[in-house]
Image (cartoon, rainbow, N blue to C red):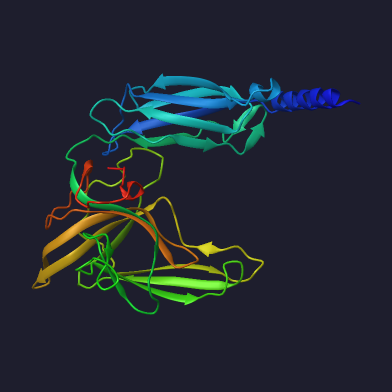
Length: 322
């Protein structure tokens, strides 16, 4: 058998496999306001992918698309047939509302010609643009903790460690790294204690799903519920086990710092938010994205992305979510 015959046979086999795997997908979306009220007339789009390009000697995918508008109950059901198990969905936000991220649906398999799970309901919260303000914001990416077994202060307004390790002047929170480390491919154990200098300072963890709705994840900080310490850990128990890390991309945090109290009551504090979780790498590096409102007692955290109060940042350090 010559090479051309082999190629033709392989392409025919691929075409047969793709056709055999083709199935129908159905998704329902329910769009609501921040108060949970249904929103009608909102457009949802859904795209799935076929790959005739592979059979025809081309690289591009072919998209199948459909769309619909939500009804009086805020719901719309979309249906497509495709040979790939991925669907990309997007809500088209009307004027005056924040855009929504793409939502990617991964189906688990086919049953009777239908992609599973069949017709799950996805709730999307559509959030209006209300009062975006300038904030201090920074994407901290793979920041080495400069020492271990000692609490090192980080200044959120400076975006740096406090002197002499950086340009900061006020320790808003402390990071204390503990390390039992040989090699990331061998057993190791790292943890970092996050603490605060003032009574009333702290973090409040909340669920804020990533890429599942409005790009504004957190709008206003609550008054209570903050915890004064948090420990993050990453470890590998043995060479034959995977790395274990307490990280959840759908977990975000509210933040309260520089708290002042009188007779047990908070008289002044600064509020902020951390989008996504606080990550600790196997090499003792930090990754987190924070925003801070510099106005005492103001709990508004709706960020004007064009008015970052933290200047001279590198392009990848600038947050682009409100």
